[in-house]
Length: 371
Image (cartoon, rainbow, N blue to C red; front, side, top):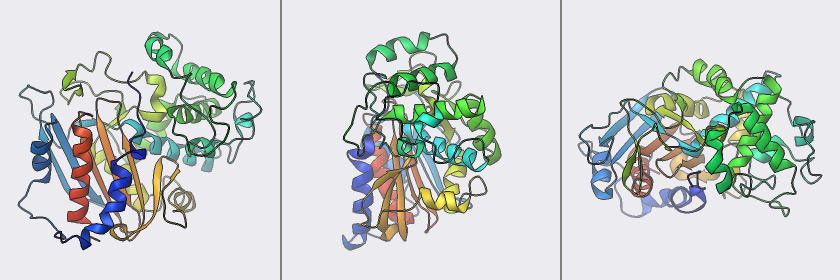
């Protein structure tokens, strides 16, 4: 079973963002040696096939590096221009796409699920829920049984179009009682598949075409695509074994709005820089402020594809964080909108690369954003 696990609920994003402000009080240097190669050092300590990382401000690249092999036991090294699977970090892209289409008047603002899907026999408990609640994982949706093993085993052979597949998944999920009737936060990829289905219904365009036209092309993200990257690129790894991208190397493509984007790091920066430039003209400053508003108490809350944390010294204000993995790749992104800095670390492996990306991100955070 592939899918994308809610990694941020477990170890490194929460631990990293709470630990980062403590670095200044732990006797650690504010900036590592300029001669050190943090990516190579992290790779050597991890045993992962490859790692890459970058640091950006609102306008430029402050650091970028890559080390290791595209395929374990191969001889083809990764490069800083390679493509990396983002997993659930795709969700923030779908959320910005949703906000952009709302501001264009092509998707309804504040619409209920009943209004978004009038043709679906929606369970009464879902009728008043909204797309915004879906994007906060707070609508009561769960992945099981709709995205269970049965779906994973059969979805790749589905001959229906991707919009038709997503509409069917939305109908199956919303036509049954909520998986979590008590409410609250419950992470589920299905939330973002339903949002994608709503956008497809509103515009008549597939999510892939929409996000290309409304996000990737305006931002000049020419390397952005879907699924495991093909060609002369890194391969994902399962239990240390490289997985041919022409095989079962990613989730079924219907999961797209929740987690199938791949991209080069410097193109990913163009998206992350939106959060340091009040939306960068893609969405309004008001919409961006709503996405990045931190809870008063400073604890993390999920909003529009990010965990949003209250003031952190290293961030000079709120901080955004997310991790993604389809179990064969791993990506982590940290953004400080007010300090105007973003840190990304990626690997073509989850088992060893996942922990390594977390440690690498914290190393770069200490180096480039000392508290």
